[in-house]
Length: 246
Image 1: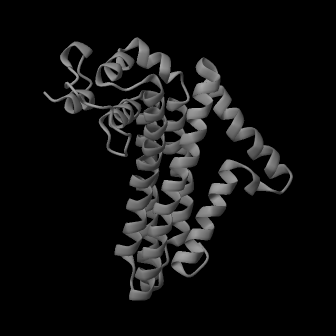
Image 2: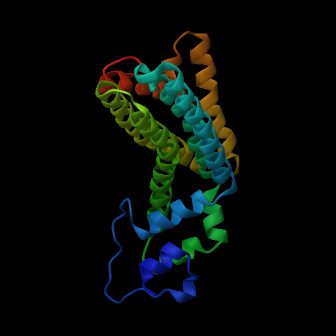
Image 3: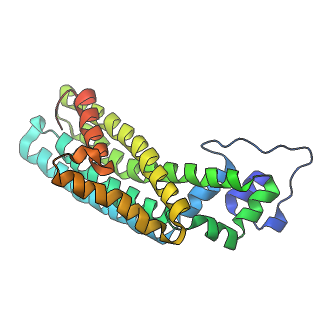
């Protein structure tokens, strides 16, 4: 078993040897250490529950889209349904991953031998922390992208005219952009809260997300919060890429 495959499959430290003369590799989206952290995060109970809920939400909206197509015929437009579903999925699936990541993952990695495994490979604690941060962003984006993009592509398939299909394709691209940006923003917030709050990281994340959201909404400035800003980004991306309001 190679070192990279051992990392990816979570082999015990004793089973991994560092090649002579090898140098620590820079982190990338598919680096073994990043993939290991991402897979561990995806397997967490909160993240799995959020993903199941997100796909269930997507299924409900898919049925609604089919019913809309049957009722309105070739003129049916699905942009509004996709946007609404994407907002829900972002906080059901993406938010669940963020909550899982906001726990004291560093302590968990130490307890379960991941820190030792990374050290054997030549990764410093700082590199492991960076891998956790990048893994969180990737997993949040993936959790949103899968269900939301599936529904957006269903809208393309159900389109009755070429014009509607092209518009729905623009919505799909907007959803993909939104998922990536949300992964970076929400993932970064979760990682920072985990580092600062440690055992109280989840409570800190909820405070960082919810308190400004409520305050900004009361003040009539909903875009001045993370959820409001991301929602505004989604609306803007849909308008620019699909040629119309969501």
